[in-house]
Length: 204
Image (cartoon, rainbow, N blue to C red; front, side, top):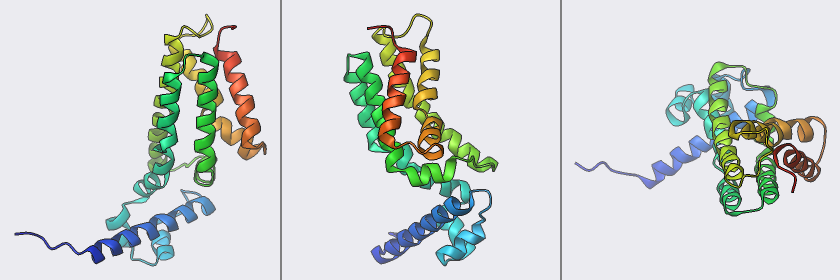
């Protein structure tokens, strides 16, 4: 027996889910992930608590949904394709700096607003660790490309190169320079790229 599918009902469910995610995003950035309850999310979205769970899941699932556009931003894929295609190691680092800058800048309100102070609650930490794992995997592609080109300083191996990339082009560097110290993204990108090249690459 075929189950009846109502486009109107599906649209209403999608609208409800968007309202829940939007309300949670606003509450998390305003008050911090730990301080917000599912009941508060439900009240802000004007739905029942059970509707939050059935439509969007618990807080961790909602957080993952909020972070997903940044984690899976198309710019990440484009950056990695460009980095793998490039043959100049200095250009590869510049491409990576530009790509990480663009992703952070595009999603800054969510990334800095939610993550710069840490989440505290275990469920939120697990979600952010998964997101950081995706970030590290992307930087590992860059490290592998530099290894293949024999571009690294003699004292660096692949693991050390990944550590250096994470130090200069990972999330915390953008949070520190742009969010905490007030640099603009252009200045931060130039400085981080130059510093990463000096730390990573052999002399030309």
